[in-house]
Amino acid sequence: MKIGLADSGPFAFAGQRTFVGSLFLLCFVVVMKRPLELHRYKEILLLGVFNTVGCVGFSQLSLVNAEASRAAILMFTYPFWTLLLAWPILNERIKPFQWAAIILTFPGLMFVLKPWSIDGQLYGCISALCGAFSWAIASILIKQMLARKSIDLLSLTAWQMAFGSLCLLFIAWVSGESLPTYTSRFIIALFATGIVSTGLGWLLWVYLLDKLTAGTTSMMTLLVPIIAILSSAWHLGESISPDDWLGITMILLALSCLTFSSFKHHRGNRLNALSKED
Image (tube, rainbow, N blue to C red; front, side, top):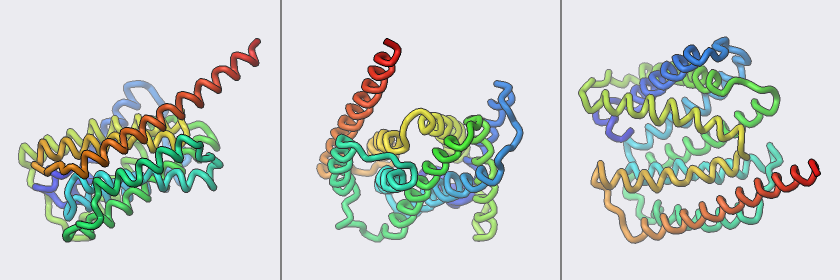
């Protein structure tokens, strides 16, 4: 995403990569003979606003002024917002090991983010936080949609993304962003983010939301900013400080707590099911 900004404005790039991702998924819908009709369009349009326009738009905008590693860390504060929203809205009680994960993760994020040395990246940091909160709202909306009535996840992901991509392109046009320069670097970045991370990534995300609690799913994705820190150091030359390594270690410990909590929960459910069969 950061590399794509070298040849494009943030909203134009975000709109194009989500459009590519939606076309990729719609092709899968046809190939797999899944329902292509657009049902419950009001809910899908609302999801597109938060899951594509808000989440992708703000995250891409944050990269204009912030380092890729810092923007990724702030975007992935969304598990905290998701847990807080899921508690009153979805009645998902925060379990002891989830609390332990939160307690470990928060200082871990602070060590990586280093808010005491933002250095002119405030606008980008605020944009990333807006994207994180929008993502949390989208997670809650998806859980509510699936709870009300089953819907084809592949079709849902493709249609909300297609709608959101058109909104992002409209924002790029209204804000006066210049047309992208289609260099080989830009085309590779566009299709890598459009097909792999946007198309396939979001399909897996929606699938997990259907199988796990919103809080557990969101916390597990904290592996992503760790990968972002390492890959931005490799591709973009961003340094990794001792504070970063300390934060990464704390986040990994938090993920271990979360994994143990999830294993314990599913093991308990399986034992209960077996006892009922007996």
